[in-house]
Length: 223
Image 1 (cartoon, rainbow, N blue to C red):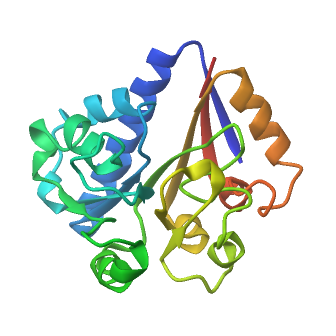
Image 2: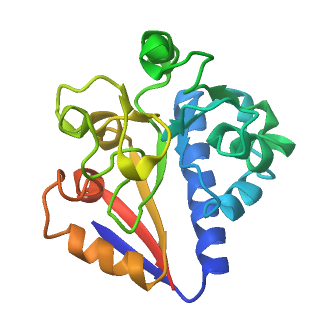
């Protein structure tokens, strides 16, 4: 694990956005295409704002969330909705969104179709993750119903996930997909999450799911 610390959050967000843009540009030059995976929530919003204005070949960039709540895009709980509002606009409006939600009562009903849509865009070129104070990442929550399966080396790319801390049912990228990303970045802010990161280094992935991706990750932190 590599830890990058920043004097303030504004500098952090700008530097991470620039790093991601540079890595995507490298993939586009070499491969002609790239896949970017990002978290939901409001914390990475400033990164999305910056990226949306970057001059890249966005038409050849696939964007997929790390995870999604099983709610329609009309819900204010939808990560996809936030992505459209903050990232998939301006120049980045040309990017291809790879969905992690489809209309159905439960995620199990659409799992195969969503996996079929995701697989052509793997492995991930650039992965940006968040981490909760409980040391979850994506929707890999401690105590989640299918966590052990999701952490397994033989896990499918996507799994439904239910956990007390998660609220709604979720669908999440699994540990093998996250680990196989070419560039892994984890974004955290504040003293509580810095302490959680240090604690995670001493625990197993079942206790601290973020541990599953830490070894090859660059963690970006500001107070």
